[in-house]
Amino acid sequence: AIGDGVTVREQFGYSDEDAFAVGLTCGGVIDIMVTPVRADSPERAVLRAALSAAVSGAGAALARVVSGPDRFLGRALLVRADGTHEGGLGGTPELDRTAAAEASALLDAGRTGTVPLSEDGTHCPGGLTLLVESSVPPPRMIVFGAV
Image (cartoon, rainbow, N blue to C red; front, side, top):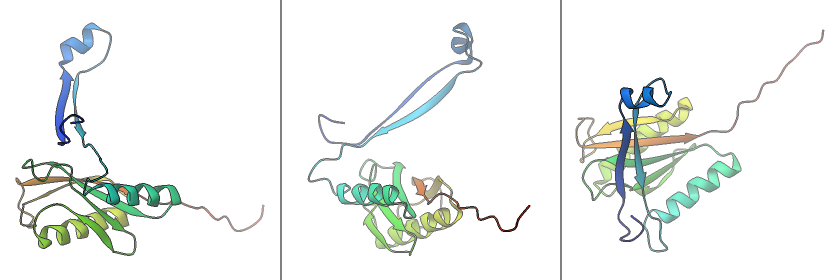
């Protein structure tokens, strides 16, 4: 990924038997996606804005394509708490609108999750999978009364 600037996705794991042999209780699989961010990367501004929102405590959701055709992998869309968004997933405007709506719903719920979408933005699974990472301000608790 670093050498050619192309997003790559790799899967690592081991069986339950291998895990048990070294004292672990179970095996497992982890998917890793590496997206190089260079000065001319279209995602650079979006990722910078997402980091700024997280640092400042502003609510924001970052939607990234984690599975689908190679031309979509790593593309990013940032949705803010006020509903505005920036960036794009590299498809149709309808795809960006649908992704923004889905990311906004997860942001409102304070959740991170995956969303299956088709390349044209419909909810038909099998085309793309988005990982939506929500960053919300920490909750506040206000206590009234006296003991």
